[in-house]
Amino acid sequence: MQTVFSVGTDALAYGMVLFVISIGLSVTMGLMRVVNLAHGAFAMIGGYIASYAAQTLGFGYAAAILIAVVGTIIIAIPVERFLYRRIYGAPELTQVLMTIGITFCVIGIANYVFGPTLKTIPLPDTLRGPVDLGFRSIAAHKLFAIACGVVVAGGLWFLIEKTPFGVKLRASVDNAAMAASLGVRTKIVYAVSFAVAVGLAAFGGIVGAELLPIEPYYALRYMVTFLVVVSVGGAGSIPGALLACLVLGGIDTTGRYLLPEYGEFFFYLAVIAIVCTFPRGLLGRKK
Amino acid sequence: MAALETTSPTAKATSSPNRLLRDLAGLAVILIVAAIGFLLFPNNLALLTRITAIALLVLSLDLVTGYCGIATLGHAALFGAGAYAAGIAAAHFDINDPIAMVAIGALGGAVAGLVSGAVILRGHGLAQLVLSIAVVHLFHEIANKASEWTGGSDGLSGISPDPVFGVFEFDLWGHTAYGFGIALLVIVFMLLRILVRSPFGMLCRGIKEDPIRVSAMGASVQGTLLRMYVISGAVAGIGGALNAISTQVVGLDSLSFTTSAESLVMLVLGGTGSLFGALIGTVSFMVFKDFVSAVNPFHWLTIVGALLIAVVLFAPKGLYGTAAQLLNRSRRQ
Image 1 (cartoon, rainbow over the protein chains, first blue to last red):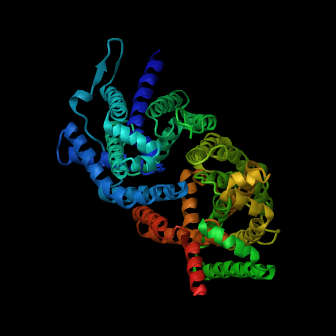
Image 2: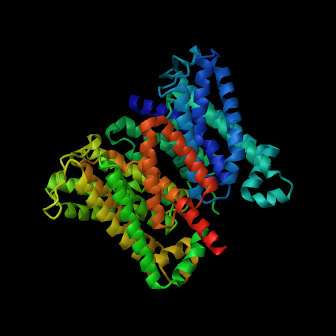
């Protein structure tokens, strides 16, 4: 029972962190059809900025998160403007190469600036200890990660389903040319959603720093995981990404607890099974 | 890609003696470059042999990515399968004849190609990429888990190949390994030149351009691609076996995602859809890597990244494709 519970909470926390980071990737991939392997790099940049702001500059946790999200978006804007815009609509291979190139660059620069050591983001006291739930207690930062995932899912649902911007976004996803001819400024929609996606990646990188530690190879190590989550969930689908994160987080965490010697074997086996059965992802749309 | 459409009719129009001449010229260039490498770096033949093995991997990747249009980030699975097949044959079954080891490596690679091709070809676009990534990770985890056979993360050791033809012993300097590697490369290269020109190779190109039309003409798209995948696996397996023979150890890194991604980078750097492009990409990437990472290993990643971005933006056809284009343009003027 105890194992079941701790596996369950760990899986939920891990799944939610995956969700916060990869939902941005899912939105950009559904919208702009860019296979963005550099998404994890933005999460890593967020983590580095937060760690720098909290440890060297002495800001509080909340302020560090804010600075990191804004800072990552500021870094991402010229990258979008000068690099990504040239590969919209290009074949997958081109996009993969370009974004792998960006990832390599970010890793090299992060290594040069911050050194190869692991960076931590000090948690505030309220998130440090365990939280008593009455029948069991779990680590506060895991609870915080789960709460963040729920808030992000709800917020994105509201943004996309209920606001005028969401209407334009959905219109551009369905048919960019038609949306543009009806007066939607698709370039601005693209830029804003790219910024939101990058901001969410940075946020997820910080919130998940306890589970996915920040180090220069972060971008490469989890790059595949984020891509897999999006592809399993179906690009552009929020419920799909949520479902994929919970399923894959559950499989990965259970595998690590019960059969640690198999590593990620079951994770990738599940990925192959799911992608073969649902080539458009669990909740992806048919074209 | 557009170059293919424009060059393939002209290639068809040229008469066969001309083609033979070009093949011989290519052969001569490979041998001359190999000889120059031998004379310039007599103390670094291990690196040159490694380049030869990786060149076989990149050639095999070119078969599926360049000629069939399958985007894969998991091609090292075939290379590693060949390396482990040859290594296990030598370490556990006492098959130490290098030529037999290469044959076993090719067979292992072909089987791995059949398995991974059957999985990867089920998807398209993003799903295909993710499947290929999952396949290479799965192979990696299997090799890691079956440590009794593969040595796990310690690597598979205990490979001591016999002399080639019973005459040329594998010496400390790596002379034999290098010669053996170049001989393999030349043979495979000539066979592949014939293959990509054959009706089968043309069919693959046709599938890359327009799979629906090819299937409407009555050819089996999936069957053809799977056959090409098996051939590609055999070529990659030969490369893996060569690596196992020359280094006498097989490590888990031969099955890694990084190796897959790097081989794709080399292919695109040289130019997809051309066997010369694959060779040029491998040699320039590996030499450059050796040079830069000797200076500073961390700058290496930054430079590779910048190089990739530059290739995508300014030379999407790769070094060979861009050079060929420039040459054509100047010839026309």
